[in-house]
Image 1 (cartoon, rainbow, N blue to C red):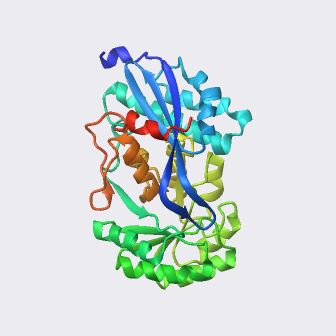
Image 2: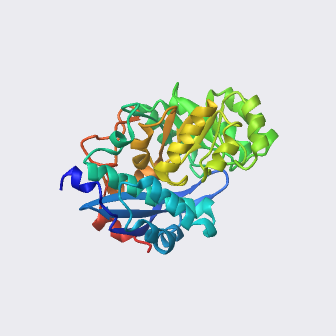
Image 3: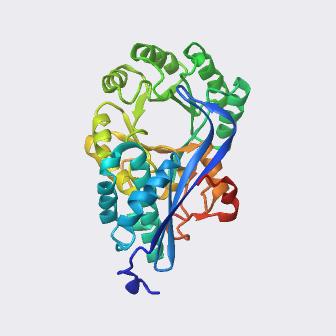
Length: 364
């Protein structure tokens, strides 16, 4: 089929499956513990092509795709992705737009952008328009459940592989956090060190630790207080010695607007903020307000869209998601010297579901 005959191609079907994959070992951060991760995979079909998107969320997001979103997407022009995005947002209105609904919309939107690029026979970043060829990464893990030896092994290993930045979790045991940061610093040498409290600290506690971490060269402090504590983030942004970041729990544009003037780095997660369509809006907001912009987790899904936005600082190479995406998808990108380079020879986002391998993890 030629491109010309595909320009009036309707979405024929939208399918969704959830998979739950156990972690290698129990993990925790400053506020949560977990032993598995659920990924909800959406595929949209049109014109003999299959677009793929996903979100890291509860399986309930898949139920929402099936019950509310699928019917407003099927039959629509496959090239009209913004229209489908608006339709899914309207369909989720009474469900509650932030949270699980935004994650469900994200998976559908990512699948539709992928489908559009595949129908055109080009990579997703070529469709969106590239402003860079590679995406800078920071390797991320260092869970609070790790022993010091495991922390040294993981972060030191990433440093040895050529990552310029690594991130560790803090906040579970504040009285031990400075010692753990010192252990990490010794393991990574001159590599940049980031910390992430996942909102575990109180304001003054976070400020005190920010200065202590600063003496160890910590350059980036993610969610030192809850992302709901806008005044606390502003306090840390103004007084802490390192860059303050938040935004991974921003689901709609209003969430980003609330944060953009109280952080140094605005984060966005394509699997939570309404997909590629929502991510592009968040990036535009960051640019308008003159703040740095960073992508949260899901590196295989972010790689292409991060090549298309400006400003952009880095993408999180998150241990759990790297492992899952390698298990479930052919075409998951591999880093080169701490950066990702999307494969322009593969159409769309370049990912193909390993159906037989994935089946053992099916949750729904």
